[in-house]
Length: 581
Image (cartoon, rainbow, N blue to C red; front, side, top):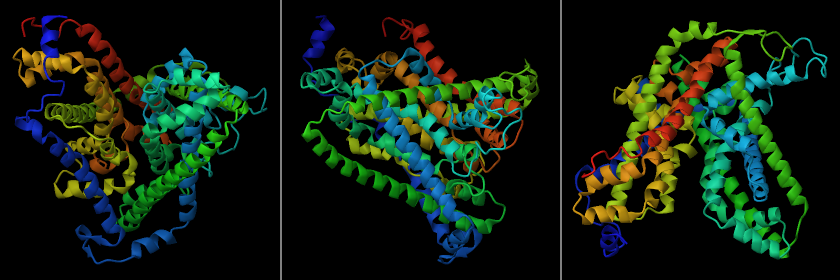
């Protein structure tokens, strides 16, 4: 044992409980003010116009006219039905396939190819993934080309609505493809905290198959950690806008798209039924989460009886193998979607039913270079600023937590999930009203602030566990040698946790790049990013130009993750640079 370790061992094991000085004590309050206050004000600012109250338009009397206008809208029932069927179906399928895949992975580790493909799919923005899926599923897409004409006999694209179909099937497929990597990552992370192999070996000694044992022993232990991520996936699937604009039906669309159309209308009288639709969207999400929770309780009671009976079902292994195969197939579909973006961006001529373009050219890239510059620079500026502010707030909160010895309860995670559980359409209009009152509407600052609402939760969730897992003896030893808490933070903790900090920053950039609706509302149509341009082009623009914007949009998060991995390798041993500090 070294002298430093011996000295640290004599110190009390509790963290430094001296009250923090300076601005750190205000970090949690500043985070709440910048994070939760706009969301609460946004929900209120959306709820009031839903009942006729909007002083900015000289409407100061309560009325149910917005709700009557909403229910009188042709196709409103179909819009609500599409919202429920696509959102619930996508969530149920994604959760079932991920659980089945994890059960089968208890027997065999995931293939290297599947693991390698998960990263780009997880990092790809939702809009870019939706555009790629549309390129695959379209009547002239790769899937039809692969089967034509030798199997289908088609020499022309068929007149079939495979994208933006009236039943929302393409939207459901796109949501499942995008959400499976996220849920699988959360599941594998939760599995790392459970002695899976030891429990499966004990179950095998009692005659249980590995899949059967995983479902009965492991899943009940990890589900509590997956509850909030699943709720977030459910809320997103029910209220998604960018993917619904690209893959969903157009007339009538889903409820969130219908509300966006009214909010974007030049006729201000439509703001009121739009607010009612947004509030209805919030009610649908809350009710769906409540029903899901009730389903958890019911399934839990039935599962206890099933476990108590001790049945050994061999069919479960086959179902788990099927789930793993489907997850692998959907992963390949997601990877092919991203590849389709790249191929279309360089396709000079591509006739149906040819599988590949006749020739490739970078002419579209050269033509769009000037057009790309402004949205690219805006996207980078907003993403860098939102990620930097989020990282600063998260580091301050985590440092204040350790210095004060505060133990953050798991219930506090619900606060972080508020912007992920509340539909964006339900509070962004009210947030825009708040920005207007602050004279920030349509500015970059408003867009950065609105992105921060979604960036901060992901940055905190990705950095909190590595930060709390750092061996406290490093800090205690440095403090015992006379270093100040600030010096320990800068010279000890940050260098040791450089990679998790950079990964958290990269996640923040990826989340910011993905934001469509916050940019539309906070930017008031005057702030253009790669995401807003890609969604606009996907509605009827040239596929080659759309592919260019979608490729650049997809590359930015990957570049961020690449830097987060490479920078610590090049800085190892060079920070801190001065040996005596």
